[in-house]
Length: 234
Image (cartoon, rainbow, N blue to C red; front, side, top):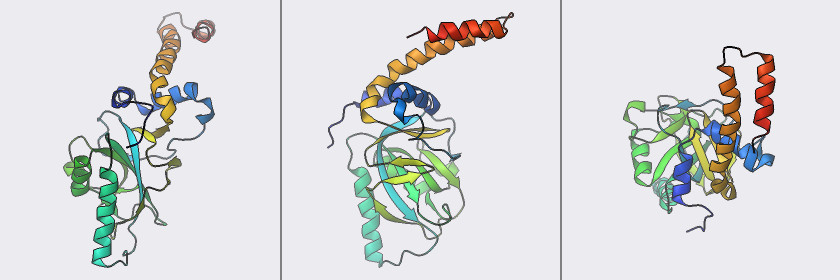
């Protein structure tokens, strides 16, 4: 298995914060990443109330608009190959699945069966520009970000283990992905352990401003005062 500069406990800790907060922290820890590395379009979220998920990515591509054209044996081998790839992990993963169709979302890969299978293979959820369905029958605790549609059409796995892009977020195999109802972001492996301290700093800086806004005498002068005090916190 891959040698990682973080532990499962480090990833679990990041699930205590929502994805926008993780993005804020990355602006401090890796400023060059401020303009990319996150999704830039809206998803349908199967379970908005679930905690964020965070784990190394398992990446793949699908199509659904047309039949796959493979023999039954070849199609079965492709499906098993994908499942074997997902299962090859030492910690819970996040699947990132790119729909290659000209109109992504024609058919749903994700529903009752595949969420149960992937949860059993230690996946926490999926981020996809493709379709999701069976929302009332999704495996408990399994998160889905995608497009809600009713049919699976001709959906099939095309490839896996190669870089994918979903809603503007480029993801490679094993990169750390954090996701919740807001979307998803890739966290550089070397940044994982530094994020809690960055969040603590940002929280302390923001607290000065937020507390000032609650004062009955809050005005533009008080705002200037709060901004100045916030900038002095390091």
